[in-house]
Structure formats: structure tokens, C-alpha cells
Amino acid sequence: MSELILHNYDFSNFAEKVRLVLGYKGLAWRSVTIPPVMPKPMLTPLTGGYRRTPVLQVGADVWCDTRLILRELERRQPLPTLYPPACAALADAVVYWAEHRVVRPVALYMSGMNQDVLPPALAADRARMRGLPEPAPEVVRRAAQRHAPLVRVLFARIEQMLSEGRAWVAGPAISEADFAVYHAVWLLTAPSPLLAHEVAAFPALTAFMARMRAFGHGRPTGMEAAEALQVARDAVPAAPRASAPFPEDPPLGAVVRVRADDHAQDPITGELVQIDADEIALRRSDPQAGDVVVHFPRVGYELRAA
Ligand SMILES: N[C@@H](CCC(=O)N[C@@H](CS)C(=O)NCC(=O)O)C(=O)O
Image (tube, rainbow, N blue to C red; front, side, top):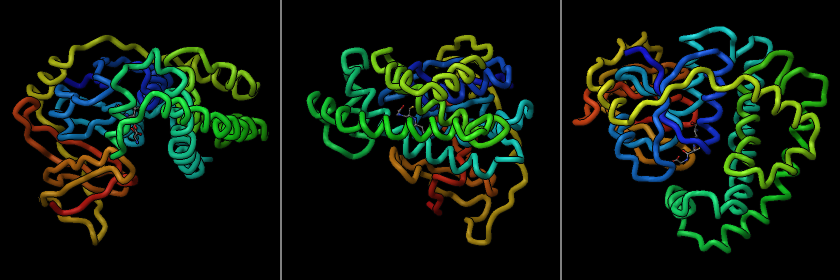
């Protein structure tokens, strides 16, 4: 019941961030392959509607968003750390930069150039997720052309970060920032090696990618989605940790709604069972998953009384 179950798919870069952290920490885990596009009928019963990738499950507890998934993995396996005291706050800012500034241009360049190998429904699904009309293949291709220069400019900044005398992106020790920069760059060649030359143009970045890749993925074994739902049904959620709310927060026990503040803003509704500076946890009941507690990071999500 205490197995780490990661709901993920192969070319998801945010999933790759977590897979590599599982390798860094030397952990065994179960891998459930989820669809890369909606619908996700075996995942959303667990999450209450959150559709993004990846999602971590342990028994009847579910963690959404890699920012919180990494904190949970750190709690379970503190060493080696992802949050070295010497640079944890700076690393947090670099993670935001990599995941909100670098990932999108890389995704647009990569997906426009790899339309022949990516799932045909992907472009329409991602447009719907952002409330945009479905793009024609030429539009996707033109977006790739427009974003190629931006990717080179951003990779040059990473090259500079890695050439300023620090051992790792944010300082003398490895941190979440290294995993964030890694997965943002990894995405460019995730479906095919077509754009590998864009990384190869930067020697420090190339060496960094090899150092990171060497962590591997830990010890995964496959699990069917139906089994993961059964695990949730058979388990009871862990007792919530003590809360440390701000005065403005809804009280514990209130019915609340949580949604991402960027895109894929499907709201998740439940009873607030834990809240502190890092985390918001909701209890919900689902016919397929049973009683589950779904955990979200505080930063990056909007919380309001339902
Ligand atoms: N802030 C989220 C972002 C996750 C994210 O955007 N993942 C992408 C895949 S790499 C996604 O969910 N795409 C839509 C999908 O998989 O349904 C996190 O850190 O987990």
C-alpha cells in the first residue's frame, strides 16, 4: 500500500523530471502509463479532474504537480537532498524560469517539427486545454519556426549559467533547479533526435545533460491503471499532517475549489483537510477511487471556498 505509483507517459517532460528524481534518490516505483490527451478516465477519478502529467499516488493519497511531488519524495527519502540550504531559495526562482519561460518555446519548436511521430490528437488537445482553436498542421509548423530562435537564445543563457563557475545550475550543490532545466531541454529531443543539434551546439549544456541523465530512473515496474484505482479503493488516506493556515485561508472542513493559475484550469472540489505554506490537501469521494486525499502545491494554484 505504500508503493510509489507514478502516473505518466513517455514523452512528458514534467514526468521525466520526476522519473529522474526517482533515479537520483534510488527509489523503486510503479509506473502507470496514462494517455497523453484527454479523456483520462482512469486518472481523473483519482484526481477529481486534474488532468496534467505526472501524478503521484501512494495508497489513497494523490499528489498533483511536480513541485509538490518532489517535496513529497524528499519527505519520504530525504537524502540525497533536492533542497540544499546553500541555494534552495535561488533554485526555486530558477525552477520557475525554466518551467514557465523555457518549456513553452521548446514544446512549440519540438512539436511543430515532430508532427509525424507525435500522437495525431496532441495539437488539438493542447489547444483545447488552453482555450484556443484547433490549429492546422501548417500553423503548428510555423509556430515551430518562430520559436526556434527563442530556444537558441534561452539555451545560450543556460550555457552561461553552467559556465559561471558553479558546479550546478543554482550553486555548489544539486537542487530542483537542475532537474527543471534538464527536463525543459530534454523535451526538445523527447520524441525523436531530429533537433539534437540544437543542444549539441552548447558544450557545457551537453555535458550537464549527460551528468543528469546518468541518474537514471530508479527501479520502475509497470502497473495497470485499473490496479492503481484498486489500490486507492482498498486504502484509507493517510492522516493529514498538522495545518498552519494564514488568517485569510478557508477553515479546515470547508468545501473548497482548487485550480491551476496558468492553464488546464479544471477546478477540483473537496473538503479542506490540510493547509500550510507549501501545500493544500482536499478530501474527496469517488465511485471508482473511493475516499482519496488530493494534494496541491500552494504556489501556482488558486484556492477559494466553493
Ligand atoms: N506545473 C505542472 C505542469 C505539468 C504539465 O504541464 N505537464 C504537461 C505534460 S509534460 C501536461 O500536463 N500536459 C497535458 C497532459 O499531459 O494532459 C507540474 O509541475 O507538474
